[in-house]
Image 1 (cartoon, rainbow, N blue to C red):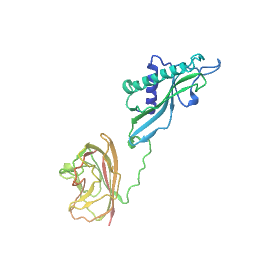
Image 2 (tube, one colour; image 1 turned 45 degrees about the vertical axis):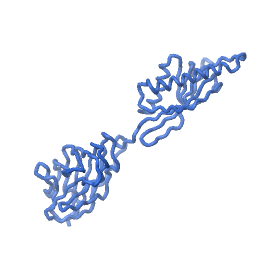
Image 3 (cartoon, rainbow, N blue to C red; image 1 turned 120 degrees about the horizontal axis):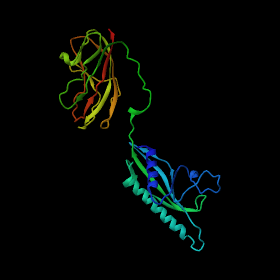
Image 4 (cartoon, rainbow, N blue to C red; image 1 turned 180 degrees about the vertical axis):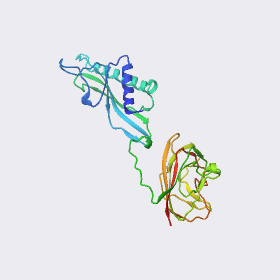
Length: 314
């Protein structure tokens, strides 16, 4: 829900009201008055409600918007009654404010926010050019609005490829569910784009790993998208590059999410293992999330995730 949606909700409440006649928004200097001559571009019908924005704030995954909600009506000067007419108009304007608050809380078709009812009320008279009286209320609305880097309109920064020639490039062709707390197959990639050394064994060929054939140093890039499946404990940390002898190689750089993503949120990641020597001894390499002692969340690695290996001969 946007800032405009909230303002439109207030405007709709005024338009639906059977007594209120006009609505305005802006700085105090934008308040309309009865035209003093035929050339004046502004006229106003009373009772009149004006929404004056003040300072808002963001707190975590929500934004709080604040306004002065000003309700006013013309007062007929009557020296015999003193301030009686002012009090009558101020009381009526307070009721109009309560009507608007009730509409926003219970009836607004745009209601997707939390209306704060700790409202400060200030009566006034003769505040503006017309002889008016009324009531000013502090209006505060909290709107859930999480930050989402997936929809930001920035051109992505594409890092240069790692050193070495591209020897391996494989892509997953289906979403893969990972359950770190139970027995789990390594990450699977069926689609082989590049395999210069002929070392990739896809699941359809009875494998799920890579076996280098030449001495040298490897730089690996694992890049794709993850999505939470089940909140079962802690969000798992980075995957490991696992050698057949049980050696666990931690990434040298990673954008794997540090905390649990929101439900249904797809989060991109890029993980690198840089400068890993390898001597062929018939050992294979896999990429996996290894079970930790504590309970961990279950998650997907989505279709289209890639693994690329860049090789420099010894």
